[in-house]
Image (cartoon, rainbow, N blue to C red; front, side):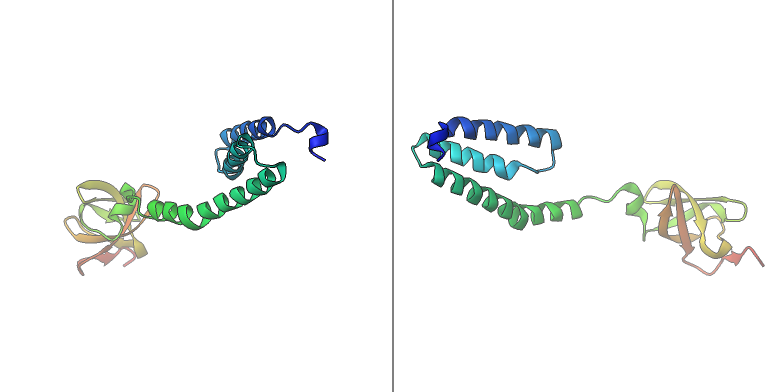
Length: 160
């Protein structure tokens, strides 16, 4: 039937390959990469004289295998690499100890700490006033402010 339509396989597969390349270039999200590989293999099969039926079957099989290979082998490794990326500056100080440079007083909106050589604006939980030179531990970052807890008992509640 395809022979009746004057089917020229290599031209069809070349157009399909270019089409999938254009789609992939436009989306840049691995949408048609599998079909590009299948079309390339089918193009090579046509040039070696394989039948049209074999080309079509191989196109679908190779495309499917390419997709499965990516999902089962490559993607898990990519996810591991992104999980192992170095933390940002803000993430690095969470859980770290530091020192109060300027008294932390949430009611006056004052406070400054030094952690790992970096100076951060700071606040405390429960309206605690933490005096200068006190040791603290960073619990979280909200915006550009580090929220800390004291490491010693020399703090007072500002509502007292």
